Length: 319
Image 1 (cartoon, helix red, strand yellow):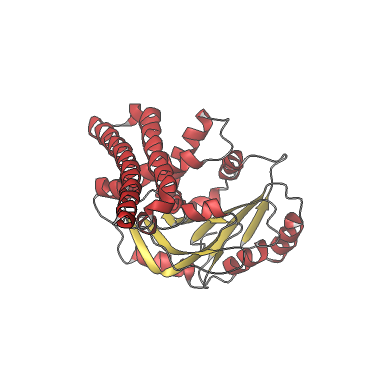
Image 2: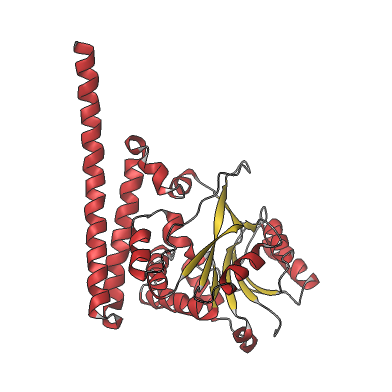
């Protein structure tokens, strides 16, 4: 394990259509890695494929599985709880989706290089390509929160409240201590809210706390290909600037993004207020309040814009 540079964490369930491309893209990487795969009792042949694949690549892949099928949140707790002392020697961590893949064998190397060129960075975030069911790739998306000021990073994240912006800091290369901090925050929330089947709010909270404490570098030379399986999720993955340019059609999506971000910020304050300094506590309250106000401003903007456009249209016809 001493020569391994990255620990990759892969949760899968019924991904037989995509899993081969995913693990082959991992296998092709030109840096040393260990990939920990947890199959959540797949029923479509995924487990059988992975069992065979891992048996042929035992030095780089480990396959585990829970005794019963788990929710997404509980499955993360399970895989995070699997620990080997040798993992502590691996300096970087990254989570990968079982239906996604890495665009080139140099993917991990590019992310590592972007951090090691400047040790003050703790996370390296790739660009993302979104792939729909027809295998068509969209243009690259990137997260614009690279400021060295932690408060400004949080402010930008709050005002870029797409699913990509809020959640997918998890899909980035992290130094071990940054990942451990992110994971402990996520787990702390999930253990208090065991009824949550999906860790969405927990991921948002963990992301805000992560970018407050750790610095981010964006790597435009590494591309992570993320598959989209339904139209609603596709909308949430669109850049916020694109949505704002078409408010008439998408204002409900924009509002959902704002209020989801707002609720997550206030949830974070509630859950971790005892651990926060007064300045941090005040900042989060201010940020959540601003997000709430901006959400309503967006709503009234769209309502007034629609009404005004109708009046203009009606007056034009009357003339």
